Length: 156
Image 1 (cartoon, one colour):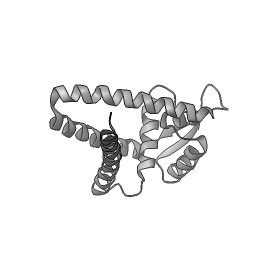
Image 2: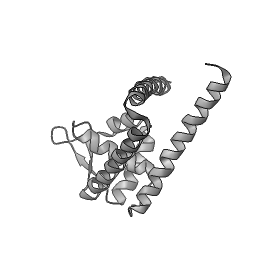
Image 3: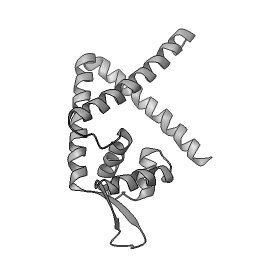
């Protein structure tokens, strides 16, 4: 890849990331969800996804989000105060604290999931089937790259 292509790739990655965040944020405000930050929405999404497989301990959630346990604690404390999350003791081991969602969080997560489905549909329409396969394969490689980088950083 030459220098020009690298510069364009960098521009598009940053540009697309910022557009997704901006679109997501404005969409939620339009839907009446104004008391949550995007980070908080993604914490709720993580808890919803992880509780399906009983992996909703703080350490599981922090790993899933690639954030520190301290950052997660701050977000969870805020979401508990706002009525979106609840801390519960594990029935099998009372020393283990699980994070679960309230009905309020489930509703917000459903809206969030609908937003993501709509976004994917619009992207799929724009690129078509053949390009979509290449895009997914490329994004899979990017995901592996960033996952490996996050794991290396956590070990330090």
